[in-house]
Image (cartoon, rainbow, N blue to C red):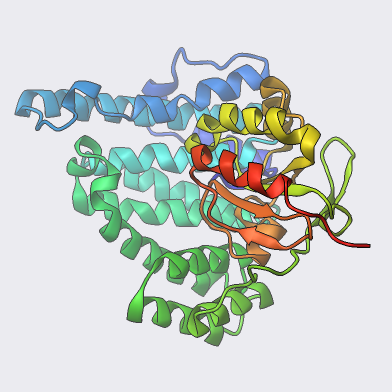
Length: 386
């Protein structure tokens, strides 16, 4: 998930930009970004495409010559995109993507670390130090930069394998390293709710003694927020922060101004989808969601979207582009969205079904193809008696 965008001191950024190493300067020469910040950010976001191995390598081991060429490609791209991100920060210091631009600086250079480039490590250390020292940057942004920088140790240890084989091949090792990153970040930010939310998410998908260990750690942490401790307590007891067959407390003012209150929607079948504009399966499921809405809406079927994005413009543009007719909740907190935290939702898409009596009927609506029959039966059920 992306880190919430915030403003950064122009003095710090310009200083960091001007003190790029020769290697970094070579990557930024001739790469001036467009004057339109939207177009400029779209260019910076291409960093993810630039770091991917060739598709023809899927399931194959590259030759020594191919790996050497890819190493050089990654190094060039890493310093180039770190330069683009720094330029974006310097030129558009109040843009909503400024926080993600800081992350891009570190994200790019971490890939160069995997290639064995020592200059990348130096630049990460200098950049992180400047960000942490600038208290005008909101805490979650500083935490995000610190956590991403912590990935450098893991990427350095794995070397080119993490680039040629893909991070998914190292999922268990990476999660272990990420937990240590979080623990290290808590030593500097002992009350940061973002870190605790991430720890809860890891604990939720863990099992056995490891889950108990993480949940206990959260419960015993003096700085953990009440919401994180509540969810940790549920994990230890084997319970959930919601109950099937019981009402769900969701009410908000939607992005388009509509007032949404589940307690006032009795007599309707309501689908609640937790989603984001960067969630591939969420996007892929949109045609099926719209088909369900169009087929059953006149029979009393509604959909409510809970966006865990952190940029309002991205959600508004996406909703308009896809012509989504249902209301959307957005609070700009990303994975700290109040409903996601309240109900312990840390995977996307998560789809719930609320019946006509206002009771939570299902929390397992991931298979959209199976929902049509379920919804058809639910809309034909009797509503609440007055």
